[in-house]
Amino acid sequence: MVFSSLVFLYLFFPINLIFYFISKNNTYRNIILLSFSLFFYAWGEPFFILALLLSGIINYCFAILIDKYKGTYKSKIALYTAIIIDLSMIGIFKYYNFFVNNINFVFNTNINLSSIGLPIGISFYTFQIISYVIDVYRQDVPAQKKFYKLLLYMSLYHQLIAGPIVRYIDVANEIDYRVITLNNFSYGINRFIIGLLKKVIIANTAGQVATAFLDSNLNELSILGAWLGIIMYTIQIYFDFSGYSDMAIGLGRMFGFTYKENFNYPYIAKSVQDFWRRWHISLSSFFKDYVYIPLGGNRNHFVRNVMVVWILTGFWHGASWNFIIWGLYYGIFLLLERKLLSKILVKIPSILSHVYLMIVVIIGWVFFYFVDITKAIKFISILFGYGNNPLYDIKFEVEFFNNVIFLIFASFCSTPVFKHIYTKLNELIVINYYKPSKLTVIVFNAVILIVSTILLVGQTYNPFLYFRF
Image (cartoon, rainbow, N blue to C red):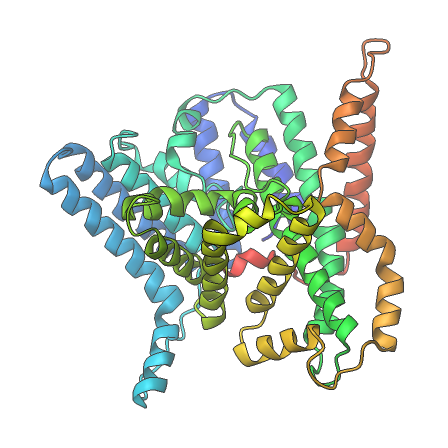
């Protein structure tokens, strides 16, 4: 089940709201929310819910031990054991076939591959539970004594499938004591609708055009067609993932949970370092706090630490060499900026530093999209005119002129322009005790919901891109 589906919008979610608000008792609400979260996960993968439950049980027990023996070597042993088990689980489900394929290739062996699929969201909930046991070890938060509350934290369907990565310390108090106000609920609805707009209207539209070019015969692809395809994918992946994050944050707010922001207009950045402060903030924060700083951060072995983090970042996204190359690619640019480029970027006009960043990002998405490295390199060569590919063709002309207004609209939506407009509306003078902006927001939400519903009718299953991570 996905947020941008008619089943969720008009069946699952309304029923969940009704049962949730029947009582004001927080224990009842937690049990209802846990039940609906497990049902949500089991909807698509009833078997893999066992992996989620097993992970919860294991980490619940080890966190109790870590807390009980805090300050002793037993606590450290319990922590390491929990982390090893967590990484082993994700390794078996997500990375086993990758390692077997490479072993078979290098040593000419014939080890059988696993036929077990990848549990949706395993990368996200594994990192969440790892952050929990580490924070218990660091004594930043006490171990949760009630299993169902820890399982609720792990399985909250708002962010279970594709983040943001929510730390237990940030929601521990809200699990026990949360207040739902009309303003927060209203904000949650609006934030969810914005996410729906991003996914259904922008990301899905861009994805259709991107696929038409990126999955075509590269030998016949025009240079401008290649640029249009990868630019559309650049639009798709941002609005798809940030749209999911908006929906998750909005859902959380409606149920009394405040999740941290996961995106902050990354495409307005002027450096790679700034871009990664704005993109998938929860993942960057996780690697910084639990890998980069413990390795020594900026103090010791800086280059090694950066490359380790970015290899892991790439590998986290997928069990394929293209993701590792994608991670290395960004690690190298971050080192270049730290040692050389940052001095240049602050001196050149802002527009040039922004163009530099967008070229780096767009090329990076090529490695992210193409699992086949040979195809990725071939595609990049087409982008820069190397080879016999034509400059443009009829396919490019048709798709470009059909989507030029969409491109302009999507470009504006990737900047804070509309946010500033909304802020200005909220600052209008109150007329008859009602802000004009309130009516504007209501109409906006209604229109987006109606348009999204129309677009979703008859659509095939179209999950968020980050579901596969």
